[in-house]
Image (cartoon, rainbow over the protein chains, first blue to last red):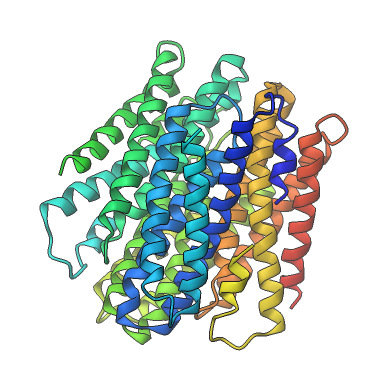
Length: 130
Length: 130
Length: 130
Length: 130
């Protein structure tokens, strides 16, 4: 995505942490869009057993989108805020991945969404480990 | 706000936790809008010392907005997800309140915003204590 | 909501247009939250006939939230942008109100949501008439 | 982005319009993230002349994000709503592109952001032409 090039213009010294944070931002934006799509496909099926996955995907989309916005910004970062939000996002991705995995064999949208959520959780964890 | 009446229609049994969660949702939405307004007034002043408060207010707005959306929903809640996101939101509110308080004597928008952030943090903490 | 007090600090000269815009912002934020709640209650009912209203409520929530954010800001406004976005928001509110009204007799959440959407459309139209 | 694969699972018949809409969604999400990054880099420069571009980039980010969310969904679409919101988004992208272009020679972030806004406007216009 183009935002990486724009962030590259930022006067802050490029650092390893920035790369880990931008990876996190990219995964968050991919995951937010995937969760919106997964909730939409699941909604179209009108099945009682999918209400739980629709709910968690809507929540995960919101958490990932906010986290993606925050992780893009480089000016005057507040580390406690960023860490707190990314921890919440990792919890959301884990919850959504686990619920999607319960439907992965017969709901292709859930199978695909679970993968993205796992990848986003890994990117969040990589930042939290710095 | 009208969403409380609509949530009252939800078939889930009304509970004390729901009231605490809805209070949290309402404070999150108030805080998100206040942070957007604070960042905008501070931006118009074009002062180097306000860059930090603009950044943290933009971040806090994003965290609160996502948390407000999640806290409104009642269907099939995932408690770990909700707790994780609200913990992140409390961290964002605290960070924004502290930064705003540093400017509270000469920036009225920061003084007002700090109060809302403190109130939102209290509402998040009240939920986390349940 | 508190954001009105914070906007009152903005150095821009207070004007009639600002009051109409802030009214629009407030209705947008109320409408966004109401649509999220309406979609959630409707989702919990798991009825085929409600898929259309869930979809339109999710869309209306997104349009209103973005419009609310934009209408809060006072610094260096771009009138064409603001008008374009508010026109889109009015279209979203009308679509959601009409779909909700189709279910108003047997779905209380839709009855309540339709009212808020109509009110938000009126506030958008009031701004567009300036 | 992964959401395209997930949308491909949707039972609605694939159509030319869907492809145009998904292209629009992808450009909106790229543009939203780019505008957030552009506003952040511009904020870090603390220059009076950049207040206008920061404001319009924040607005454009919000409009694009909401439009991207709406364009991803395929279930029970309301064409009037979608067209209205995409018209508003095209207005936002044009306004942001024009403001960014005024700074394109000495602000690299604006030069890059203007390109993405133009591309997103083209994708919106392509949908509106269907």
